[in-house]
Image (cartoon, rainbow, N blue to C red):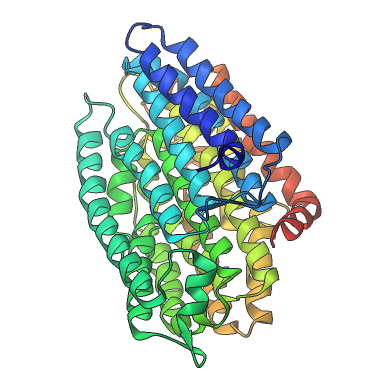
Length: 471
């Protein structure tokens, strides 16, 4: 790797250097707040470097892109990581968690997200994916006093190891069939007379199994409700947004070069998308735990994202990118609300604990209602624009049946989102006391609510920016 390659990786190097420094400082410096502030400043510095230090080349060692698209997601994941750290301040302090390790792991996870979004080879894809997955293995179970957290960490570890095996074996088969790890060349070499080589097709099938686990596609979604329920809310916010969004960003970058290869997998992906949307929507209806409901909600959204990827058009890929940004902001806000309500007795997850909270904490509950309605796709919110763009692109691409299933799943989702809102504002008050929240948590909620409203009313600037960023 040359000096010019290292220049292209300056944002990632800042994140890694900051993570290592804060990890070492945590061994001697026991005050958590300065370490958390250091983590936030590190992510912001990396975002500034990605925005203002243009790389000398468009690709780094044939592993990662350094295009405007890749740098845009580097900035976004850094900002998402900074919001996640801000939302974690009170959680880390009250639970007396090892702050150096916590901040370091979050920064390592953000680094993996940025690398995955920029991957231009199968090796880069593997390195980026495993970088943040390894960090989440520890982050999910970092609260050792909570047995649910340990159980969630074990489940994620076991199933994640299986998914890693599928991914490694799939990459090996694709390499055997194409003779290269570089994605544009591998995708071209796999095609013979307009169809994919058999070993290459099997390899991509195994890679899709691994990706299906990472982004919770049915039937690979069964880990999601249990892991979300046991994971601390600030960590779940990053797990539900950054880890899935980075995979989708990598898929968008990959499909730009896919050409006819994608046609051989279209039938399988159509089935996965339809099954994922319906299973997620129907699975969320009987839930009585808010975090499990958000888990099934994420399954629905990942199925919708797959609709945009199936269009294989520039409009569909732009809509998919827009959708994942909006989903990440809204989901981050929902988990931050859970974090802000959590006290010494734990998080308020059960529906019985949410009854009447809107009367005592109207502002935070109003923000939660806004974010849930955006996830459902209510007009005048960012979620409506995102879903409209996806389904419009699907209809234009001849996927009308899949678009109808997606609209049906969105209508079903209104039922379970509105159920939570009714519990907050229309039921009798619960005897459970909620925390007043901290200034950092309120700041994150203000940012999320503002973004949802502004993008819902003025979506064109972001849509135009995404269209220009896509190669």
